[in-house]
Length: 607
Image (cartoon, rainbow, N blue to C red; front, side, top):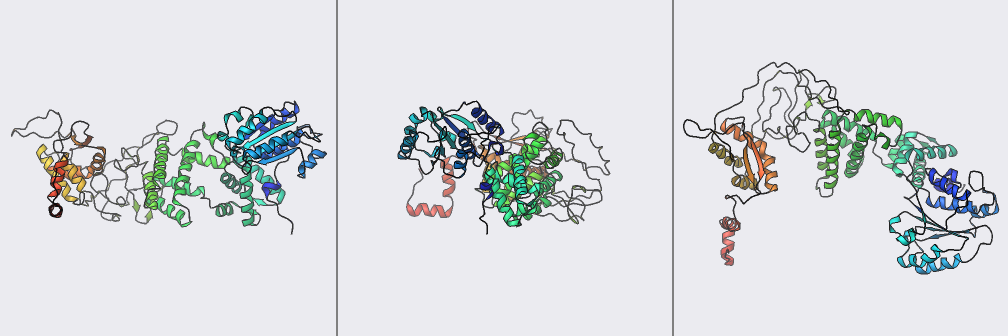
């Protein structure tokens, strides 16, 4: 059996012309050789697998070549080139600084520098991973690096230039190697596959190139792995299966769900992804990256940032034009928040499902629809035969829909279609009642949105109403009646003690409004002016705002006035008179029989 050589070694470049993805840098090196403008010290820096050490070896071989080609490459035929190719050249010395990083190692190197060449023009010292040298070793190397013999050339290679002391950097010509583009990697992999006689699909090579993250050595290693698993027939499916890569088709299907506000199908797609064994955190980061790419593809000026086949980029551009920039900003923000919260989340899958629900609600036609539960979000509609599709819409005339997943709409009432609709997938409405309304009105069209270029599409004609909306209740009310209903609301949530205490302390107020008097001397509340609720801190404000839709509907029902509104503010002035101090809190706690007995047994005193 023939000895197998991995592709990363077998196809390692031996000339400047065969180096992939570094044309500008190799051209500079060839010009320096052709014009005999050689520096005594070079620093090659860049990420892993981009050709730093390879270029250093080609450079060292070329400057000692007896008959370089017209293109500035080594001939690979003279004695010096053959000695180097066979690994017996005395003029090219390589040192691995990762394992030889002490002062003694550098002193031994300094002694070798003093030995002149026996053949050839230069002695080249290649020090790989030079950032691993200790500070003492760097200091011992400074003098030799600054004033070496005329025949000595140093080439330092590193992936972490920032770890090298400035005095070393100032003595070197610095060459920054760039990451190799996906297109260059795919082209080179096609060349290798042709030389080896493998059958490959270009989309499969693009998956490998993306996985390599700009490193040609990594790409060749991954290519060998996929070839071994597919027996030389590299297909797109075999590549994603072998490398455990999530197909972009899943993200594309999810984007369709976001655009059509199809929550059930989004959750089913995520379940399919989980069943394939993909990690939830990997899915979040992949979705965020896909949304970023869509946003980039939506603008011709930024589309050049995408790497890949033109067919894939064109498809992403078409999909991106169906959403506004605001959607992508909010969607990426939600993905970023989920990414930051993933580590602390006790239920990882619930975190991802909540993210998908919010993303599906971003294009809801309701106001203030930012996916965080504020505003009136579109219900998660399910038709009688299964999940909705974008073509059928969430509510077609003549069909019925179910209320939102997990309970009511945020206005406190769960208004549904006729009684033939499916039951709600959750609890009752926030006011404790599940009211339905008979209606034969056709579905309202989705609110028109600005296009990606800033032009508003033509507004669809409003449908003709087939029935008259129920009139709003407008019974005159007093502030005392509102406060009484406000204080009674916590009885619906006996376990929410913090909410009960907060509502007891923060009573609705009409502020400094001028309110007309009624004939009986009572002061009615103006329906158009929201009542102010002042709380003591942001945590209380967040709690009250969470329950505010339910509270508002409860108070409206109690006073029979649908125009009643509340606004929550944080009190930045003196504490409210109704706020208990520490002594009052302790006194209230001491009224508990068990705590009272505990204080008596231990003979404690409240001070």
